[in-house]
Structure formats: structure tokens, C-alpha cells
Length: 381
Image 1 (tube, rainbow, N blue to C red):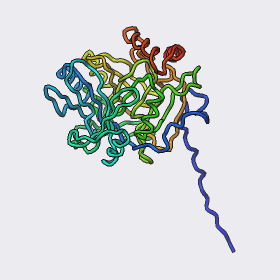
Image 2 (cartoon, one colour; image 1 turned 30 degrees about the vertical axis):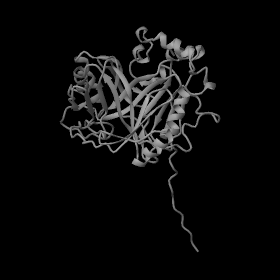
Image 3 (cartoon, rainbow, N blue to C red; image 1 turned 45 degrees about the vertical axis):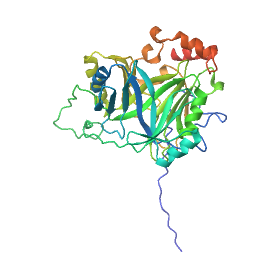
Image 4 (cartoon, rainbow, N blue to C red; image 1 turned 90 degrees about the vertical axis):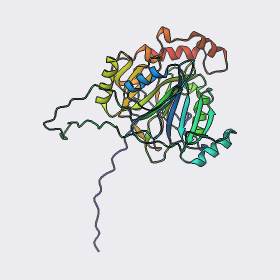
């Protein structure tokens, strides 16, 4: 009796997605797992952000220069969309000052809204042709979850550039000539927030909205106090999601830090930046490539000093990826590009709100003098 054998190739080793994060070790056995065992719901994406602005005409000019498409403009409302968005990126309302009004997530099903409303002891309300539940996170920031808002997709996306690299050389007899023009926003990617109640806010997003952590950052000399920044993504199971949909870091202030919008490719980031520079807008930091999330980035200020980011080529993780751990440091924010600026870090003299510092120390927050010292050390390392 003869037997046959089948030659099989050895399985390729799984790539460590957290390799090179400036950390000698990953999460320790006693540290946070980065997810909740039984969340109330699992949101699917970040739907839109809301702002208040005193001058909607000036806001619309910047928005179009940055690359948004204006889909609604009235004396009191401005709605901005991306070419691949399934919802408006921004809803902006006329008001006495420039401020962030909160962020809205997309629910997976209408029943999730009812489940969330029962948990939070609130009600589902109609909104913009769909339904919405309005909540407040432990930092005091407004958070909503929506479902069913009808949106028409725009058909003005920019095609990606044809690239010659390695053995793939499809561009023959055709020079590369990217155009200096607005970047053409495709969609909202993420929002970054600062909070002085980081641990409570982190647990709330994991339990209430079912988000999971892609990466944690910790203060080098205070790791025993837990992480001080988290990059959270949506849990879509085996369907990949952006490395982070929301990022939060511990600090003396509470509120908006920046928001990020995906564009086609590196050339689009670069030429969109050239266009903004020619229009005399203020670049905050860029162009470079991040470590956590890997995005090619370029940060700008709008006329009201709020920060907005163009990005391309970000990481996508499914729910099998466990959190990475790395030290919080200025040098750990990018793989290449110019040195991070004080403007981006919020450490320029005009950005330091000493009243917020004092208030955070005096009230029931996670901010104390050792934490402040360690945060400042990290931002200068």
C-alpha cells in the first residue's frame, strides 16, 4: 500500500502591526485590554462633526479652498460633504463664536438607537430625514448616534495618480503633472479630543459605543497610572476600519483638537497644501507620515484658528488586532517629515490657557502637578 504526501508551504509569519512604535514591550498582563466585553452597541463610523461659526461666508470660502463641497448654504446653516461621504462631513451653524458642538457616529441599525436610548435614559428623535440619539460623554462633550439620514453621493472624486514603482511601470510617455488646486475631500476620517477625565471617557466610548483601541500611549515615568492617549476604531468584525475614528489624550483642557479628512494620494495632499499656502492660510505641521495610523498628513488652521488635517494612505485594522503600547513623546508622532511644531503640540505661549491649567488641578480631574510635568516632558522629548 502506497501513501502520498502533499508538499505545503510554511505559513508566513503574521506581521506585527505595532512594530517600531518606540516601545520595548507591548501591553502588560495587568494593563487595559482596549475593549469592552459586552458593549451596548457598536457604531460603524464617524458620520459628521458640528461647529458654530460667526461668519458662514468666510467659513464657506475656507471650506472650498480646503477641498470640501458645499451642499447646503443658508444664512444660518452650512453643510459640507466629501466626494465619497455617506453623510455630510460637517454641519456648521451660525452663532456668536467659533466653537465645536460635538460629533455624531453612524449606527449599524435603527434598533441600535432604541437600545442606546434605553441605556442612557433618553429618547430617539427625528433628525435630517433620519433618527438620532443625543448623549454627553464623561468629559461633557456632546456625542450623537444617527441612522437613516439620506445622502446623495457626489460624483466629483479625483482619480489617483498613476505611479511607476518597482517592476510596475504603467505610465509610459505621460509626464506626471499634479495640479495646484483644492485637495477635493473624500470623507471625514477622525476627530481628536483633549480631556481631563481620560479614563472615564475611554471606558464610556468602549462600553457605550463598542469602540476598540488600536494604540495606547503612556507617560514614560508614569506608566503605572495607565495610558494617557488612546486611538480608537470602530469594531466592524472582520471588515477593516480606520486605525482611529476618534483619538483622545489627557490634558488640562476639554474639547476639540483637530479633525482629519481623507484625500486621494500624496500628490493631492501636497498640491492641496500648495494651494492653501498660495491663499495665505497658516500651515500647522506637515507634510509627514505618522506612526500610529501611518497617515501621510498635512495640518492647517482655518480663519478662526481651528485645526484641520488632510491625510492619505492610513492604516486599516479589523477587530483581530490588539492594542499597541508606546511612550508619549513629540518624536514619536511621525516617521518622517519636519519636526513637530509648538503650534501642533499646543505648547506655544499663545496656546497655553493658564486658567484651564489651574482649574484642572483644583477640580476632580486626572490632572495634577506630576502629570503636568510629565506631559510637558513628553512634548519636549
